[in-house]
Length: 246
Image (tube, rainbow, N blue to C red):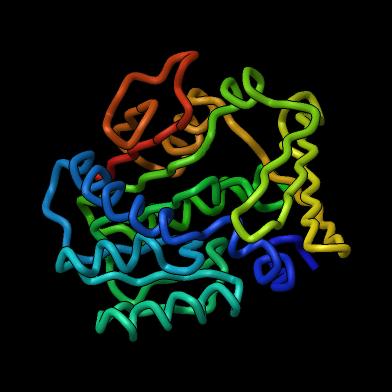
């Protein structure tokens, strides 16, 4: 089983990753997302939607939103959020590698470091190819991730986070395989019990992701250092790819 299909991981670390503040952040990020798109947007697809943070925010703004994810647990959280907010989002248990949308999408998003999960470069390329096919004749694909340069600059051998409820998360990150892969171990300490999980995913530079988008057929690719459209440089915390299909 691939690490991202381990629902026990998402259940255990959910509170660490998706607190109330992260949902509020998604609302402001969704406004910024749309400002990066140069055409009208009605139908939106969120690849790896998790608990639906951006789906809910975009739906509140009046868009038709579909979210897909391979985690039943995270999808249950997303569906509950939609019900509680009385929003008409569609959530589908599916793999972003080969998902075929029922209708062409105006905008496809992949947020929160959810790109590069598959175990080969070819499969990660296939995600971009699939996104291109699922877009309308004039559509945009946005990847929000962390760049290889940023990881190389900021990575720490051990990182510890302590939460208000007393939980402690220890991270042990590495860049391996000629800096192609980000490998991390998470240890969650709750009282006198510890829960341990490891994961790995590919990381990319702007040039690499741009080349992958052009290979898929996209006509124009812009690179930013934030969802606000800032330049990408050595101080950037994010790597945002905006690929246009015309």
